[in-house]
Length: 234
Image (cartoon, rainbow, N blue to C red; front, side, top):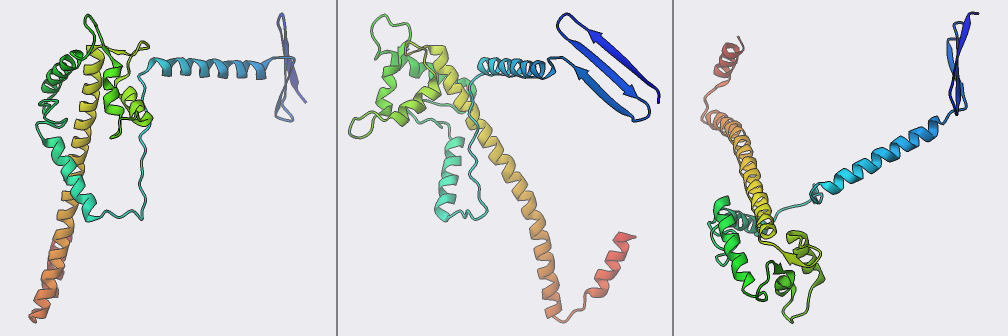
């Protein structure tokens, strides 16, 4: 049996390595801190990831509600078509907001809306107080709805003083505009795929309907189909 051993000594730990050719086993005996080093490295990597996530812009995972048993009603289809028509309109955010068919128009309309909202702020204010939006979070009886207020805060992201600058306001509207255009583009792409699939289905459907109609008339088309298949395969 041939074997050799290697020992590594340090100021705080000693590692020993022994290899045996006969048993083909590798054994490590150590007074080392390997498990603690692994844990420390893992914790360091986790803290770095947490810091990096904090530096990134906030984003929430989309909730996908899709079941095989879900069936769309006629009312759902009509509502969907109506929502898509709003996306294609020149005023997707209402006529009070202004035109927003392009990004430039959306930015210009956002600035005008911010200027009109600043008229409700105090004289000399450099930023719009978020209390101006509190009217949007009230219900018919005038009570403040916490859910609506959280949605507004999540959308516009005011600072710690509760103020909203013009740049932050325009950026928030621009983010909504980009999501709207991406959604419209994805719907259009899905519609193109559905149309292509529909053409394939229609081709086979009318093909078999034509064969059945010819057979009803008493014409035998199978020799023609066999010769055509032989020609294409050959």
